[in-house]
Length: 72
Image (tube, rainbow, N blue to C red; front, side):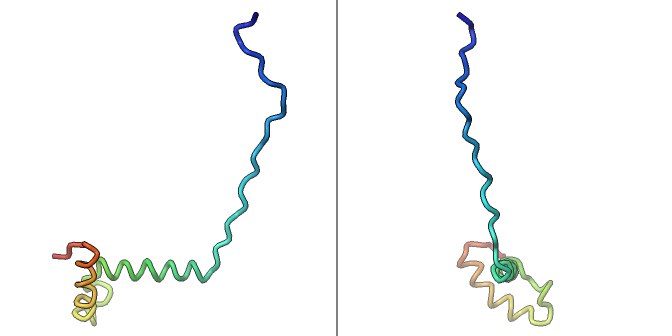
């Protein structure tokens, strides 16, 4: 008897690649705006919104604390 076992001669079932996922342009645009908003909410300290820095900082200041982000 051989030390190696005989392999089954049945055909091996192959899996087809999944279909490409189509993401609408509107969803990409919404994601970009959401990321920009998250940046402004968590790290804006006057670099981007220099002219209205105080208003933006006060607007997002309480939000940072609400989400647990230290800003002091």
